[in-house]
Every structure is written in C-alpha cells, then in structure tokens.
Length: 231
Image 1: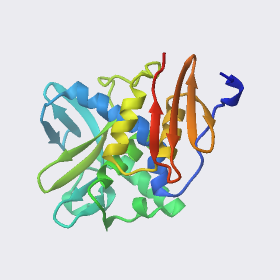
Image 2: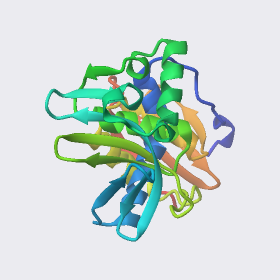
Image 3: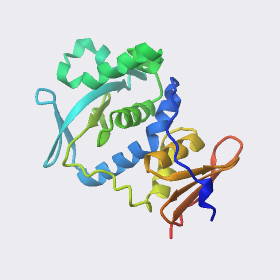
C-alpha cells in the first residue's frame, strides 16, 4: 500500500445547508446511535424550567433548536417560536444559528418558519450537533410534532475514535435513514474520524494506522461498495 497517496483534509467553507449537513452527518449520527444505546427504551420527559430532558435515571441539559409540526409539515426555529414562551437560556444555540444564517444568507437558519419533509429534523439535528460539538442530539416526538434538541453532558461517553470497526455499519445505517450525498458525507465522516484520505474518481479510501476502509461510488455519488475489513 502506497501511504504517500493519503493526506489530511480540512472541511471546506460553504453556505449551502445541504453541504453543511453532510459535513457533520456521519459523526453526529454515530453520536446519536451511541446515545440511544445509553438511554435504551426509556421514555423522555422535558422540564423547560430546569432546562433538562430526562430518560429514566439520566438527566441531561438541553438546547432547543426547533420543532417540526405534523399538522402542516413545517419547521419552526426555536428563536422564532415566540408564542410558546421558551426560556431564553435554552435558545442560545438557536440564536447563534440565526446569526450565522443572517450573516451567510442561509435560508434554513434565518427563515423562522417554512415547510419541509419530516426527515429535516434529523438533518438539522445532525448539523447542530456537529457544529456545536455536542455529545448528541435528540428528536422528541410529542404527538403533534417533533422537538429537536442538542444534548451535552459528561454522563454521555465521547466517541472513541480509535474504534473504527463501527464506521462501516454506522455509515450504511445513516444513508438508509436520511437522504444525503453519499460521497461527500463519507468524505467528511472520515475527516471527523481523523483518517488520512485518498480520493480517486470513483472511490474514497481512509487510512488510520494500519487500518484501511474503502468506499466506491457510482456516477451519481451513490455508495456501491464499502470494504470495512479493517484487519
């Protein structure tokens, strides 16, 4: 194997929301999967006054990003939801996203209320989790809609980036759950997992120590094969 082909990449600046989601989707989705293993099947309870979400014995602080309504398939940013009396201290990340949206002219962040598909809750959750480097995000279904929050707590184990064996299965689950550009998402996932990367016309390879992972893609950037034999 020619190690000289591999190099370290950094994320490109972009104002395209879909690209921003793809830059953070891989690691954020992995965080949410690990978070799901931690809380198990425990039901969630929200305490707005305390600014926490509870799952059984676990109590975590939250930031509210926004909410999706089943009634009209619309998304409302938390900063725009002035009628619900949301506590200001739970809106700090939402305000930061609005500021970025206004500065960079990103409609998904600076438009307070707009129609979307339901999967948008995961797109926004993954972006916010990655952008703010929180331990997880959570989509809380409350019957009439879905509340999206980020969660950051020392009770939640950080992703162990030395354990690369889950990368292939995590990525396969991700692209079957959320519509994303497979190639760009995988490329950014490798960056977040601190791989050296080699990019060719139809493939992306990641190298970490002596462990190699390779994904191949078709002309539409869809995944066609993923070799996750990291022995």
